[in-house]
Image (cartoon, rainbow, N blue to C red; front, side, top):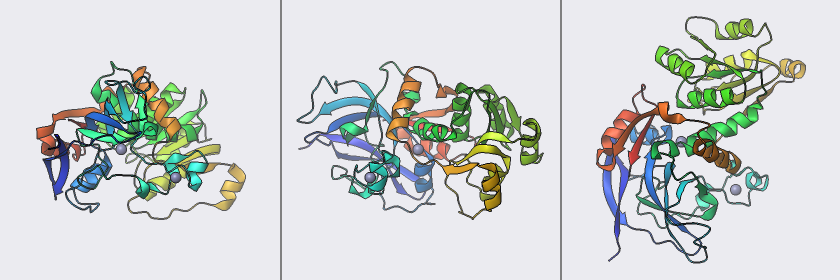
Length: 348
Ligand SMILES: [Zn+2]
Ligand SMILES: [Zn+2]
């Protein structure tokens, strides 16, 4: 009889349960990861609340950290030492599509090719005590890094992909719109890159946190005209870089209004609903501004995220809102969907 492991699955509307499954055995070239912790991202929250319908039971979990537990044939133990602290990039890159062949694996269109035959139920697999991963998904982290911080490898990697597109230079004015977890991570990263950081966020507690994390100026867009305020703060020029981390189209429109000539606007978050916004071709012509997006972590940004966390360059400790045991998974999901929490982590 196969050994068993515990998994956390979404089993109903607003319902998470602990189930059991066979312990997966690593095949040739595969690594078994002992998942020690998994943070509950918006993705998992949308499935828990039924906003995104999924086949049940469903196993979410992509913000994972743990240790190498076993390796399959063909891999050398010196390359993948048992017990080594790792994070896994669960986003699949096929290696042969248009995005992958441009070295941008986050733009891969063939995610469905990923082999999930070892999973008992559909999903990603990070909310299982053990998952099978390929060597290209493994990212080493410092063995002493606390588990809660290691769980930020994936979300910080998403943000670093965005930060890269902002091409921040020392002295730049950078606006971060939205003080949720992704906005707060943008604040920390932009600060490290030498920017004056302006955070626009209606909630006072989130503005206060942004200040603690390094924001130089915080503005309340419900109490002022955010575009005008940014213009005033920047001597009429606008900001060199604007990151929009909110899902609101009207705010995406504001982001474009705030940017300086030659500036960059990065649409970081997905939009719900996805209402079109207006952009003047003549304004683009005359300003040479760039409007772009950032989606998922690249291989590059994942590596840098693990380094930044391991070296303490980015410390996400203030963004941990709760750590829950596996048997408290229902409580963890309920806490995660509250608007006043950032990241809730399940210890597996
Ligand atoms: Zn995530
Ligand atoms: Zn691909």
